[in-house]
Image 1 (cartoon, rainbow, N blue to C red):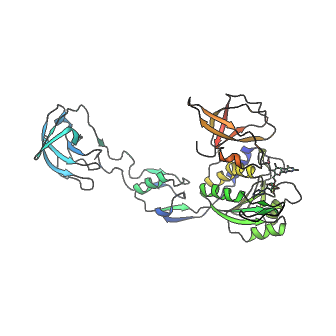
Image 2 (image 1 turned 90 degrees about the vertical axis):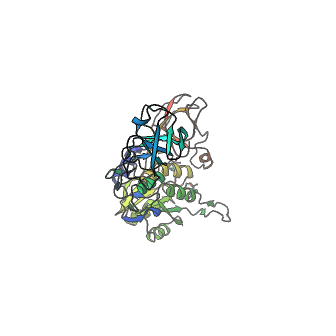
Length: 397
Ligand SMILES: Nc1nc2c(c(=O)[nH]1)N[C@H]1C(S)=C(S)[C@@H](COP(=O)(O)OP(=O)(O)OC[C@H]3O[C@@H](n4cnc5c(N)ncnc54)[C@H](O)[C@@H]3O)O[C@H]1N2
Ligand code: MOO
């Protein structure tokens, strides 16, 4: 299994070997960003009854079709305290936004269109149809399935679940993701460097990406270029997914795969026909997985987006937009390519993709402006300015 496999095949194998994690119950206050381990079924109807969308008067539409109707105000219906009496013809109830419509009422006259005098209200306008009434259940109903197993609890999902009257949720534990840098030359950021030494730059960014995708990053430090050192770091780690970085290629100092194999991990794939990131590899041991990234920083970042993100989010299809090339591209080689690019909307409203001029896999600086990856099939012919290309967003538009 040493030949590089296509990107789509790699994604399929990741999906077949997706992480399986235990679930636990958490209060809503701890559920942000977690993944649901069971569907959320609403326990209530929202709104529970027809309610007013405005401050004003609940009336019968039939009473106010013509302007100038004068009605007797028989009570008040603020939000939280429904008026229980029946609204008869010729009557109105003072109502506030969110208040339940009293039985018999089917229309709201907003207070700006009303003149109050004592316990009477005069409606200045006439109305052809019912206004400002929110029907019961326009948002959702009791028993309705609001979210499926696997959904991520986004801020909007959290409020929806709260509105559906769930105080606790069964969620999958966040995957613990161990980032293991490797290389005798590497030192932590902030170090005094001797000649030949390089900063472990990858771990900081990968850790932030992993957290943004719902993982709990665990910094496993830097292993030196020896089997013993890597084994030492692997054996002492309690993680669901290892993300070793570097030592993935064919050099004399690349021991990462062999060390994991020695630890009982079985290879699933060894290389991907992708540029950058050919040495990206994947293996498993029981419930644990390893997604090995190349050490080159751009390769590590791009392949984290392509292959670590699906493992953490459970979405194994790379989301794609269509953009227009802002500048020509040369023909592509034998590996599917993902070019760091700035994706932006032109003043004419066109989504443009502008590839960074230098795509060398050692460069980090292009990621400051690149918010997308232009996806180019293997052997794609040269692309002309104006051509449509698929783009994967990796940042804000
Ligand atoms: N003869 C061949 N040489 C290489 C091949 C090949 O097929 N045949 N593949 C190349 C490709 S493609 C890539 S990508 C790199 C990846 O190699 P490794 O994963 O083994 O990475 P290293 O050798 O450990 O490091 C490469 C480069 O990146 C720097 N690095 C490593 N880790 C970090 C880190 N955590 N932070 C910052 N920089 C890091 C390291 O110092 C090296 O400069 O292999 C090609 N070679
Ligand atoms: O595939 Mo490597 O990541 O080009 O440099």
